[in-house]
Image 1: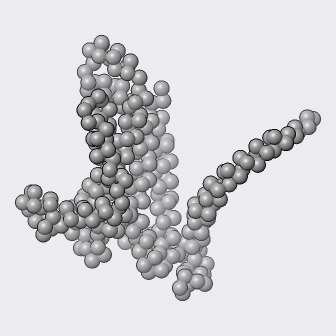
Image 2: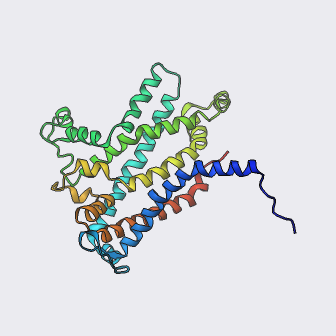
Image 3: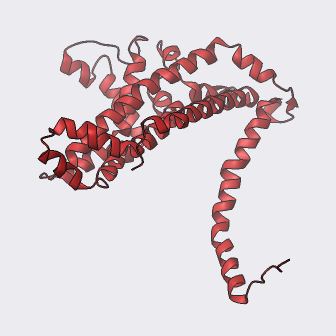
Length: 297
């Protein structure tokens, strides 16, 4: 039986400094990620006491109440409606823009910067601008189209209007990632396809999309997770008194309302844990489909 090799003083010193440098990250993960997760799970199993103190363990009662609430299911439906607009449209438009802006053209860097600017803008500023654009009385959109459309107060179109904001705000981020993926594709493939007589459209679907599929998969997966957690625009664009609020409110604003406005952290915790379960299920399903369309060449 071989004896365990002892570390030299130099190796011990290197290991010490290595652990010292990664310690802040590990502590940050534990304090800012792992502890809140387990604390939320515990809160969801308790009835919140007065002033948030003296919680009483009630088991799965909060989950039973949430699952029996029509408000929760409507919010879940609204969440999926928002994701259906944001994810496919933001990815498809970003892919077209990435292909166009990956070519040699004058002012390419300027165009890339313009499309990426919404990503670095503060959500509050974005919400204020879009509230003005959507304003029924003096909004720019109604002025341009010559109508008096209630973009964010009509239940039939409000959820689409919020989805448009989501697409616009994330477009630049998706585009930059896709440009990075495009630059990894060897140009030789396109030259060979041109010699064989393949058109630009044919090259796009037979070369660009398959070789870009790993990047597309990453973007789609992260955007689905992000869309399910949408909060900023709905919270800042929609007022609580808005008649279209019920058709727009997603899961996270509902969680915020119960946990922080009403102070019922147990009920709010159950809502967000159920959202976590839904997100995990969708992620697993997406991972299972990866081999069906993602090309790892």
